[in-house]
Amino acid sequence: MNQVITAEELLTEAELHAVREAIGAAEKRTSGEIRVHLEDHIEEEVLDHAAFIFEELGMHRTRDRNGVLIYLSVADRKLAVIGDEAINQQVPENFWNDVLGLLKLHLAAGRAAEGLVEAVHMVGEKLRTHFPLKHDDTDELPNEVSFGRR
Ligand code: CA
Ligand code: CA
Image (cartoon, rainbow, N blue to C red; front, side, top):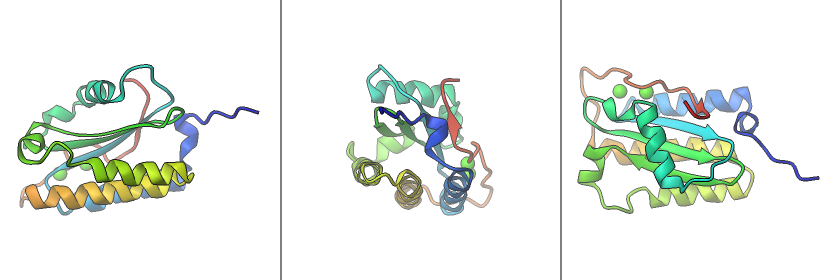
């Protein structure tokens, strides 16, 4: 039997909650905003598509241009981690590679939730060096995991 897991089936309610909590915790230490977006399957090249989703989610509208999207197409395990322009101006091009590597390892081992939680944590740690939390911080983008095309 060829069982294909959809984006909605990847994580349980408790796991979705854990990812949301991880994003909330990470955002207490940085002005950066992190989102996790899951889709079933894509035909497009993953970086191009993730950039499209980034815009669709309005992630280019943060005050400090420091939103980060962790994108996963579930059935084909295509992943991308992309940051907004203020981040890209400050960090080397391969800045997110170890986050991708970590997430890939977890996914290959069937540990999607742990992988996403750890990836969020790692992104948060990276962001806080360049974008420390400001006194007037607000939650600019929802911490909820989002699904599908918008
Ligand atoms: Ca914030
Ligand atoms: Ca947020």
